[in-house]
Length: 229
Image (tube, rainbow, N blue to C red; front, side, top):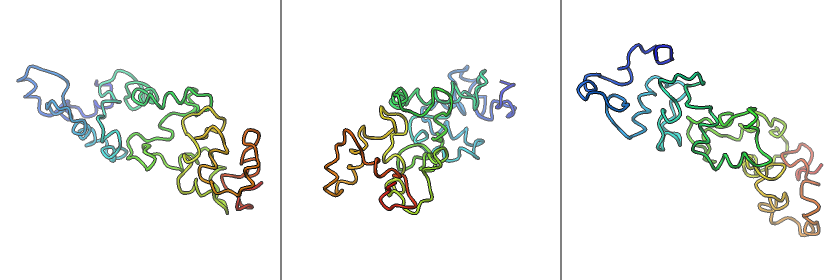
């Protein structure tokens, strides 16, 4: 313990409170402030008395509001040397609960987590409140940090990406199709919003062509209002 970050506190009672009740009870389970509680928020509040600078909004996050406390992911007295006193690697910590997301990363088109190029925290801040997409700390700008050419500014913007964000068209974790689209067919995706397209569009066979053959600058354009080449 004395070689770990929390040793700077110089005393166990900084987190655990008065030791006298502990002595009277003859030891017992690991407890904060020597009050055996199953309320995660109360445990986390003790950590947040020191960790206020970066994690002050944790209690408003999905994790903080749920059944998790700081010790779900972090080991206070760990002998391990993993960053942030994590129980395991950051990505493995996330997939312990988020098994449905883990399954998407097994598909052929995905972001490169397994290769170590990025991790869950590249896009998500686990200590932040949820956005409208219900992703911890995720914003449209998170995508543009890497996909800079898709962000413009453009004279003509694709309304869906401007208002709803990249997730309107893209499944951000993994899909069976090449561009990580929410629909297997590109045309089906476009028609989910553009159902009132001119009738002559129906003359095209969606099996051999798709909307982006003509509307190739679909993320935005400085030349064409309808995103033509």
